Amino acid sequence: MFVAEILKTKGNAVFSITPDVTVAEACHELEQKHVGALVVCDGDRVAGVFSERDVVRAVAADGAAALTRTVSNYMTAKVIYAEASEQMSALMNRMTDRRIRHLPVLTDGRLAGVVSIGDVVKCQIAEHAQEAESLRTYIAAG
Image (cartoon, rainbow, N blue to C red; front, side, top):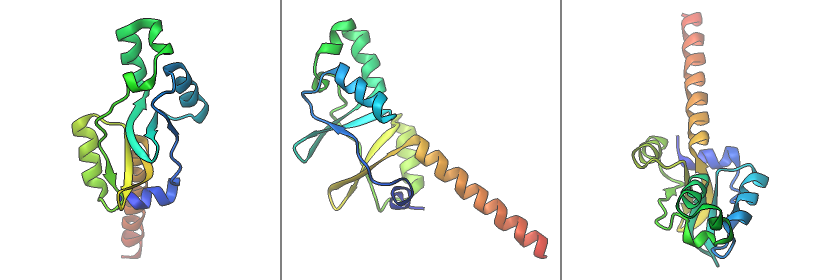
């Protein structure tokens, strides 16, 4: 299965913020959108990813004062991407090896969506259920 197939199922909505948004405002967006990460965009360029993990690190480093500072101070600036044409196995390995829970997806160099570890797990479960049903059907016919 390819990453593009996940995006077809879940959609290609990308929740983003700008680098000058405060951590408190970003936390509000995370809660309102019910997501674990936001893509930080500077114009049409991806500048980073700001996740719940970044919030924890910010508060651990700077206490409550972190909430009034901008996400550019705490975001993950070295973004790891997925390509829509990639196989799920490669994506799973990258996410596991690098302990990443959210990957922006590119198609022809443009942001096409975001895939989370939850999306990957959901896809794997659906694939295994389909395989199991195929085997049950094969055995019943045999």
